Amino acid sequence: MASLKVLRRRIRSVTSTRQITKAMEMVAAAKLRRAQARALATRPYAIRLTGMLESLAAVAREQELPLFAAREVKHTALVVIGSNRGLCGGFNTNLFRAAEERLRSAAPGSLALVIVGRKARDYFRRRTWPVLVTFADLGDDASVDSARRVTADLLARFESGAVDKVEILYTRFHSALRRQVTFETFLPIGAAPADGGPEVARDIIFEPGLEPIFAALLPRFASARMLAALADSRASEEGARMTAMGAANKNAGELLDLLVLQRNRLRQSMITREILDIVGGAEALK
Amino acid sequence: MAAAQFDLSILTPERAVFEGKVEYVQVPGSEGYLGVLAGHAALVTELAAGTLTVREPGGEDRRWQVSGGFFEVADDRATVLADEVSGEETEEQG
Image 1 (spheres, rainbow over the protein chains, first blue to last red):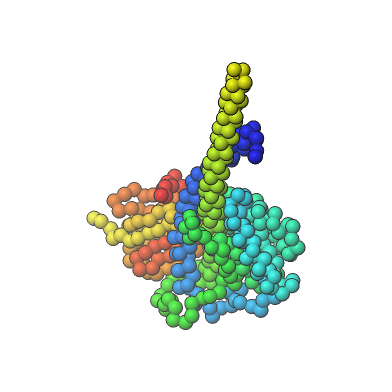
Image 2 (image 1 turned 45 degrees about the vertical axis):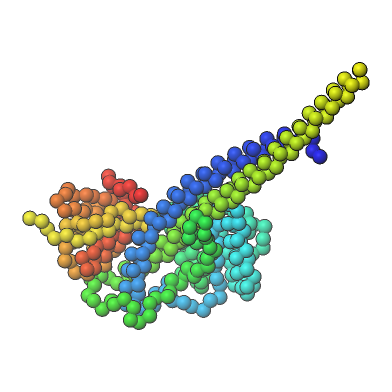
């Protein structure tokens, strides 16, 4: 059995660990609320933009717009959106597992990575998968600037023909307790509604014209989707961290109860032994 | 005399800046400033950088700076999809 001194030291250490996990849980809860609000605030714009795109898509489909056109896929880029910081339970682990699965399923040389987040960078640095570009300095909040930077890079690769398809892998946010690793095709934008979609026959005035509007619309649409993915990922991360820290907090509490019980027993038995010694000594003096 | 009203939303990728009834809106279209009253024909235009002016019913004009984006009118609903909006007024979003 451990000595009293060792037990006391462990109790002290577990107590301070519990304080830290408790604090981290509360911080994560606060950050989750903020990240969630940000994710929600991006929706109205994205919804309107999508509506606009769809109502124009039918017209534009007749024209050859590169961002729309699916072409023969020789090279695919896989964007993996991880977190910047750790201590968020299985958040990154689940993501990387899905990424590995996708990477292994692809023909060698046909799939390369675009990495977002410091933890994703650290993970893939130790592995041999080809990496096109790494964004590890995007800051802690999902911002429009970050989304534009990543999107601009992807669009350039797509338009130059270096990649024929871009897929994104991120953690979709459902609620504080529910999130899901999600896989989506990012480029080509495609999936324009079939004939008979929203009517475009009504007379719409286009200024300066349909084509330039479309050309300006598509990158913004891509960027809005990227922002949504980044914002979702951030909210999911804080949700995962909150859950992980809550569990750590609970475990620390249970461990502490056990250690305190052991310490009390040990102390009790030592006191009993001392009393027996004294009583024994007194008896002997008689 | 109350002018006819229509719905206007000013949205950026990050948040909704304005949402409500207006009498008049003037936007910096890529082909020049254009003003819109209720009952305007369906229109989609690109925006240039410039000043966005909104007249609320019975109220003062409110102004924002936009850096570009789109402006859409359809069925008495106008939407500004701006890349960025700044100005003296920033409405807090819950």
